[in-house]
Image (cartoon, rainbow, N blue to C red; front, side, top):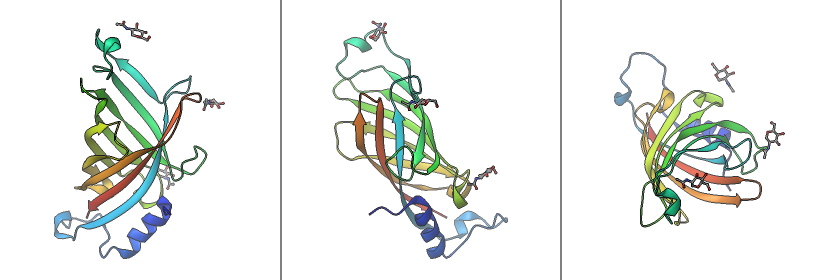
Length: 180
Ligand SMILES: *[C@@H]1O[C@H](CO)[C@@H](O)[C@H](O)[C@H]1NC(C)=O
Ligand SMILES: *[C@@H]1O[C@H](CO)[C@@H](O)[C@H](O)[C@H]1NC(C)=O
Ligand SMILES: *[C@@H]1O[C@H](CO)[C@@H](O)[C@H](O)[C@H]1NC(C)=O
């Protein structure tokens, strides 16, 4: 079973041998350590409360079976469990471009901003290719801010549920982050 984000944060805090003090010691003189955690993304794809907006498309996008040329912007809630009512731990904001003419594949750029516990206001940036037909998609973590300065790693994501009537997709994101 997935531990809650808070427990994982506590766990990673307890096992870490170094704690960032905010002093002038260079980060890279500290030991890099692996932090793993899971969050759920609440992706409201339709309705008046949509958190994903279609902002642009090409004149040919409507004729494309892969929506080639469509660009969306999103601002989705992060929760510790799959239910929308479960504890909120931040937001993920970014853009997706439907960037393939041969399959439904997104070129994504997103910032995960955390608002809970010791990671409050720290962020992680994920940039990569997301092939929606794959059960598990992987994208690189290219950096971060706050406690995630100089972070690197990867995420694995899959669709937990998709309810077109409600206009809600829930996605699971598993983070594997090396940080100082
Ligand atoms: C949209 O927001 C309103 C007001 O916050 C809320 O009452 C409603 O349940 C929301 N709709 C959905 C589909 O979440
Ligand atoms: C594409 O389809 C959407 C939704 O049906 C419509 O609003 C839009 O006008 C269409 N765009 C073009 C260029 O045909
Ligand atoms: C996160 O930081 C903001 C700004 O400092 C603060 O207002 C908020 O209470 C903090 N949240 C938690 C859960 O610590």
